[in-house]
Image (cartoon, helix red, strand yellow):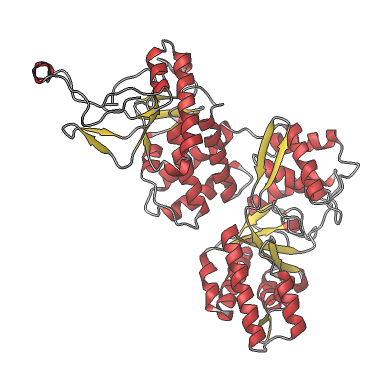
Length: 529
């Protein structure tokens, strides 16, 4: 191989003068077929889009040309040789695969290409997307000029904002997906649908309306001056991407996942939950309740098979229906009389946790905007009594809610930091002799940095004013609920513990804080303000 150098031969000056208006000086040399090469003047029409990465650009010649691409020479040869659309689509798929494999999403801060449009002349001929004016259609989901403009001007993310980072990743993958002109089984489109689903999972929700509203609310915090109409459109687009490109796992796969999760949690699959019973329940959730979140369906089946407090196969569909068509629609859990009362419960308990932790030690003030609060457990699946409000007149489950539980969620990094700061605080209590020796060791037992949650039982041992933290929490909340004080519980829970589940040809990660313990991840009801 002979690379270009300053001493390499050049054309005679008279030849250059003759063709100066026809040619521009460029790099040349001999290359191995796998040698990555850069392109100049790459804004030319080709049979396939050419990926280009923004970054530090090298000026060439008179300064009008820049180098910002890195492509194996054999790919260029293939692009030059191909004569039909299917071959071109394959080549572009290889390009996307290579970018994702060798560069990594994190290294591509921006990426552009020559065409949004695929190679076909008509929309019917396009596998993944088309461009009609300023309209992009991706797998049946339309990205209007307004939505694309919003994505193009999306804000930078706070390092701890998981939602924002998920949206940024979605935008990057959307750009990469436009390089691919075969349909939805390429690396880019598979990654895009996964990214959209993670946005949906991050905000939570079990129905289309709730999910879209939750996405919109989060986007509004990042773009407070953006119009509600555009945020609604963008939120709907993200949701539709997760649905159209990811219609959920097959029923048999969900059953396999449920069995594995039951085994991981050391539960025993009850005899009444036969394959046929589980299949019928899953189809009921998908088709009748319109539940789009497979993890919610899985969790319902898993908690039904707990060793303690199992749920019968007859009552489980009723509990799922109660959650979807009563609790979510009315907006408050069992044991609370109205949405206004629930708002008071949320504000009172949230303020107590944040303010009391801050009073204990200024170090805990950091977590004020990191906590996420949800009510979970039986109070979102069943009424406390037959006298509970039934605004939507649904069939009541036989089950009765025994308590009201709040999960106070932290992402993995902040959860570890919380454990560390709490451990330091407990050490300070010991040094100042504010706790007894036995109390100190009991507190330390709960502070496992590799654990998944800290329950109210830890906080019962933690002094707070004239009482303990848990008693103060319960006294704050009891005025807003009919549950007795000792049935008002809470925990600090780590989000995003991942359990890998592989079944047949399907493999995915179960995300969102699945814990082998007493607190269910889903169903859940977010706090309101």
